[in-house]
Every structure is written in structure tokens, then in C-alpha cells.
Length: 360
Image (cartoon, one colour):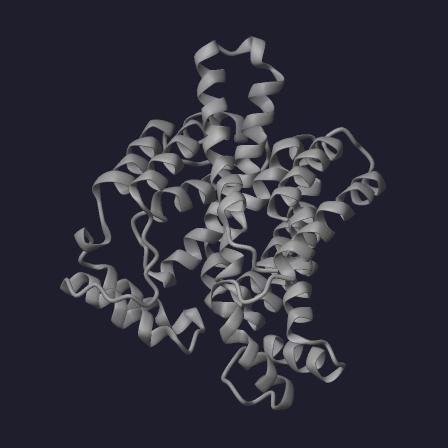
């Protein structure tokens, strides 16, 4: 099913990139949206959150005050449960909402959807692990879309909804706001590449002794009642005891693959994205995610950096489209390096799809 999903996203990404009208865009987008909702939403028992939230969904369905969650999330669970929606229906709707939110934002970059759409599958993998977090992120995406289209009242409404699903996304919203104020600024590309190399291959979390203090400072804003275990776990890393809960290590092979995928986009993306009004905001979010993800592997930070890395599907998609569409105006080395970037960006998803055990 994951292979079929990938093929559909490749085919419809190409089709969508050729349309201009909004109505045709949404007619074509329905297929990948439903495919994503079915394949990702109707999974069974995949990743820890699926199993944990089964019981929380049942409990909130009976009693909204059972857990100390944000009110909108409690209401959604209670409402769906009361009207008879089973738990797998809740997961399906969460994935459907996320997919719709993504395509709403991608509507601002139709011509680049030929690569943006397939990259969605790569950049939404953490949705399997962070169900409530990505439910809130869907509202963040809607707020960004309405901001780009100068509908500021709706922007505020979506931001409020996101924080009422998971208060931790306030940190994401503040980051986007700050970068929006600095929309004309970004690190020099070569510095971004150097930092990406350092955090991927040289620095580790245990080198950064101030990280436990940062976690403690951020804890009131993260909005998760399991936060204590993550903080204890982060401290155990720094103490050398290496706890197991909330740690997401990447192998050397995965680090090498990610580095090859991200470096060309980091190096070439700044000039390309600077041509868009808020292009550097998306570029800076991607750079933050690419640099921070391999360094801060504690789940609290992984949540934040996974959100930043999501914007690789936009930045990478636009870069690939621009370079491949005008390949004659670029040197063969740039084209080959960009092809390598695209290959290493997509191959982890394809490999996972081939080797993942059947779970549906």
C-alpha cells in the first residue's frame, strides 16, 4: 500500500503542477488526499502513539475531564466518540485533516507540486509518532496559508485552534512569527552547510551540556503531561546513563543519506527561495530543522524540528522544479548533485515501504 501511495503521489504531483485554476487543483488533489488518509489513517497499531491514544480517545469520549489535555482536543475526541466514530475513524480524520491542510498551503506553489507532492510522504513520517502534535500542526499550516493571502483574522483563528489542540505548537508559531519579521534575512548558504555537517557528523547531544536547562525552561510551554519522562531521559543522556524513553537516534547511514539530500537544497535554496515574498521564511524553517534534528534527538526537540523539516517538501520541491526545469542553464555538476539530493530524499520512504511489515 505504501508503494501504491508513493506512485499516486508522483503521478498526481505531476498532474497538479500543470494546472492553473483553483477548481482543477482541488479536483486533482482529492486523489492524493484520500490516498494519504486511507493508507496513513487506517493503519493499525503503528508506532507508540496509536496504541496510547486508543485508550485516551475512549476515556475522553466518556469523560472530557479525564485527562488534562487542551480543550479543543478534548472536545474533538468527545464529540467523535459520542456520534459513534470508532478510534480508527478518529485517526483517519486526523490524517485527512493534515493532508487537506498541506494541500491548502501547497496551493500557493502549484507549479512546483511535481516534486512537492511526493516529498509530502517523506516529510510527514513523524505524524505516525505524534498524533496530537500533527493535528495541531494542521491548524498551523492553515494559519500560514491565510497569512500569505492576507486574511489575518483567519490566521489568528487557526493559531488559537492549534494551541487549543496542543499548547506546545506555540513555540512553532512564535518561530514562524519571528522568521516572518526577518523575512529578508538568512544565514549565508556556506555557513548553513558547515553547521549541517557539524551537527550531523561531529556534534552530539552529549556535547551540548546546556540542553537539559533548555528543556526545563521550555517545559511549561510544551503542553504534554508525559513531559517529565522526557526531561528525565534527556538528563540521563547528559549524565551518561542513556535512558530509552523519548530518544530517537539516527544511524550513520541515515545521517549520510539525509546530509546528501539536504546539502544541495541548503546551498542552492537561498537564492531560489529569495525570489518568493516569504520564501526565505520557509527556507529558514527548513535550515533550522535540518541543522537541529540530528543534534537534539530528545523527543521534545524532535517534535519541533520535525515540524521545521516538514518545510523541506516546499523548499526542496521548489528547488528541484527550478533546477530540472531549467537544467540547460545550470552546470552538469549542479544538476547531478540535485539529482542525488532528490534520490536520497525519496529513497528512505521507498525503502521503508518495501521493507515495512504488513500492518493493515
